[in-house]
Length: 113
Length: 116
Image (cartoon, rainbow over all chains, first blue to last red; front, top):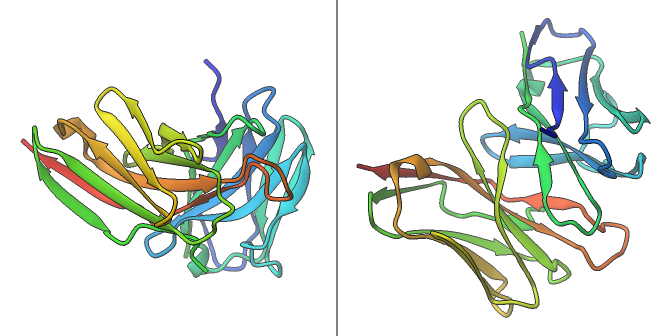
């Protein structure tokens, strides 16, 4: 049963701490997305990778957020330092270029206190 | 700049009736449109899609309509069931090529509640 796996599912951290979220895309998929779900913005695109290359991270606060794909089986989203306004659910999704839809993980619920 | 907009934050419908969810987009380069459904504490799941060369796509109780001239799409659910209660997101993509090839842009979502 192919699925996108995200860890951790929940994270509570103190303001100023570093947070790392991990994603294992579906094997064979060549696009990876990071989204943040907020009440006002819906699903906000933070980063988009195609064949492991970052193509669009314009939605990401550059001073504190970074996204990488060290290999085809792992994508990471890092926040350093974290702030209370970063509290949200972060989703990773993967898909195939030209295939249309993306498949989502279950998300990481981040709370920064 | 919100390129995909869902102007109705919520919709309430009686079981058995039709649910109509609406979505507008501003970028005429989008050529593929999707609807996702999301339950609490889960990731969004793909529901139905439509290519810009079509104006209608049907899958069981779900039909998506695309009006390219108005840059508008809608999702019809007939008949609505209580299990359809969820957040519905529309999304748009480019699959014809270019730098943004494959990127999915989502709307804000509409909360659908179907009452028994």
